[in-house]
Image (tube, rainbow, N blue to C red; front, side, top):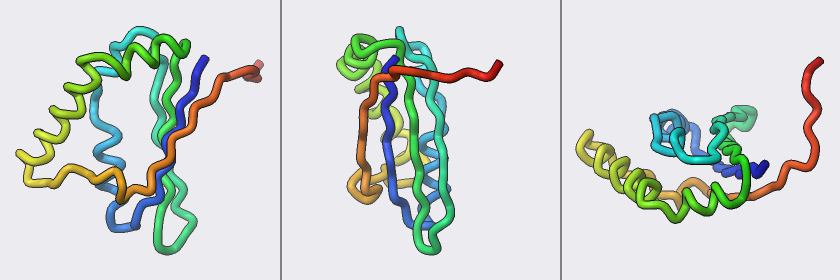
Length: 112
């Protein structure tokens, strides 16, 4: 299993907008090998929040296939179009202090 984490440091007044954007339905849910996407938040700091998105894939090949797919590219285009039509500027990824990490799961402990 492959796990991708996207970590974002977001100004408090922008947090809800980012969560809304990350929580929309996506074609990725139908992609071969996609398992799930979680959006987590840490609100402990006074002037910013940390948002972490965790995406689970069955294997590296599925992830690579999705990133290169027409559906993936079209999804980003459609989301930007929807935001503009609703009067919102698309979110600038640079403003999110975004970092991306990729991990291979080597062990999991499940509840009994």
